[in-house]
Image 1 (cartoon, one colour):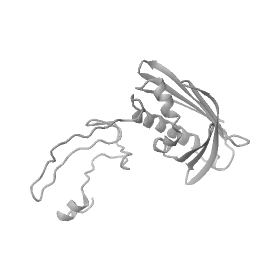
Image 2 (tube, helix red, strand yellow):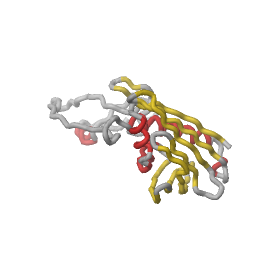
Image 3 (cartoon, rainbow, N blue to C red):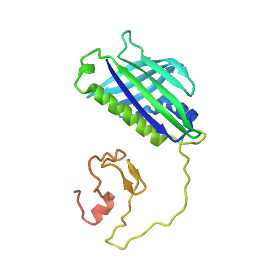
Image 4 (spheres, rainbow, N blue to C red):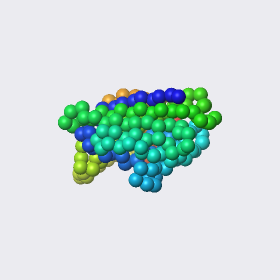
Length: 207
């Protein structure tokens, strides 16, 4: 059996963190291997995940739930492949710590593929990092946007306006890694994106 343990501190109250985590349908946007989650009962969910190149579906049952404190689950098979706990605790008035403990028990060939535990560990780490980015200290735990008027810059014929844009793993103008999962870019940041119509007008080609 393998045990995966990961944690993250988020800048929201523990109630907000707990409420957002229990929105199980949001997990596909936090974890790449998760394709779909359906709530089929008060304590039962159906998960469709990607294991290597293959999809797999399973039922998960919540076996213990303490608001703002704990969610414990197991897969609903006769001999569970995995089970675990997510702990929530306050780290201040507007901060919370989320700790995940996931227990893996290989039952088949796919479960025994080399590196399976590491892939699960990476997926949990990714979920916590993305959760930290996607939860906000608002009444709903979601971002609230406003729309302001602004003047669009123009360029003379034959010229383009160059502007930077926010990407993943970036704070304002400072990138912290070479990856931008928002746009499927990995290992590099020296990329200029141009509108296809502008490229055609200026006789530019990709690369």
